[in-house]
Length: 504
Image (cartoon, rainbow, N blue to C red; front, side, top):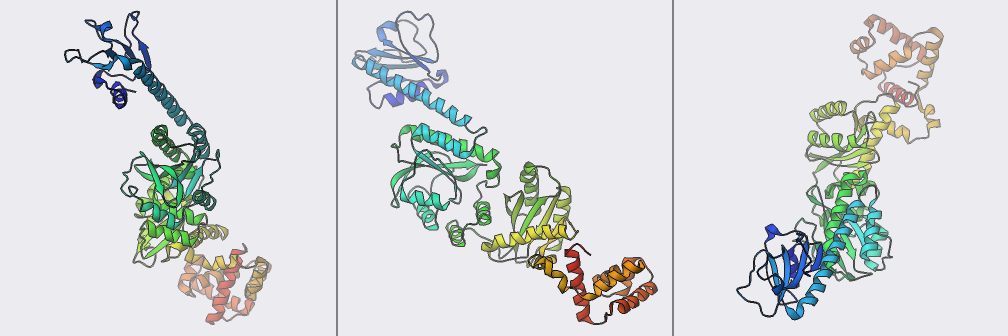
């Protein structure tokens, strides 16, 4: 504690006069009476005595001197204070207590900082709860409960319900936003005492500032002990310790204060549509008319740090306006499409380039208009990546629309799928095995090329006459009419079933 700070506090209760020189002021860590034995004065010590003891002598660097009647001619240079003689001992005891309390606060702050290394958020809150005799709760920017202390049971009905549910209701967040002073609070971690009609107990509230914006808030419930100046002073330091954990803990890395990204995460972990809708309204969130979801996975394992920093930051540059969150070893992203019905070809090409250089694979969902359906469409994007691997086409960018039929097969009883295959494929397979021909593959390429003879011959690297001969053999062996459009459709479906079952 500096001399001027101490004097400002003491002067509220005692009639002292003082002069302070901040340039020559040091933190006071000790207090001592002048007894004539001091050979040298210590800059970190506040000396007490009578003015007569130092008259015509050099004053200590920081001192408080007792006088009967303050005189204008008395020297008031440096850090010196005059106190009435009858108040000297009371002032000494008050200063001693304040300095010792300050030392205790500084030790507690140091302990709080040490708790961030290798500890989880709940351990930090439990430590603070023991030392400050109250319960603590950490909420993210969208009022979802991230952690709470467990030292003392929380008996307040409102907060017990919030903890059981895991997040605050829309009605609660709207009421909080309307509390006097809350809306105008600056983005600083100063502590404020908050009261509301919904809960009879007072709360101490401090914003958690992470990456220069609010990532959440720290709440202390006045349940076990009354809010004191110690609580008010410690709260900002505890908030900074929580923000430090946000920086190092992967669980909080992507929840960096963006209400949009916190919202995506909550939808992914199963928050109800009613509460999500309420939070969107309360925070006045805006979404494009059309959107799509992405699932981004590592194509080779380079660690979560690669995914969190390198991949996520580059993805935001490729697709500006994208909101994303780390979820179950992959990135879940919401991409705005504006008035477009789907992701444009040039942006897909950019994603392909990005995926190759970032050692990533990207699944793209169908487009949608209701953000509350994000989880459903993220599942599509994730399924596109899984299905592409299953059928041996592990492309770097996979659109769900190209794999939706395989998703249908995936949801069907696998043991029954073979019954839906056209029998022509089985005949061709058996014939190829007996005669070492390639009619099964020839028919598949022919169907993939839409029945175009020129493109089919080029894809098979054979002459058109050779292709015509093979097609004639296929018609004979498989007993199919390749000119029938319905037959060609059924054959194409059969090939996809074979491919899905690993037989094609």
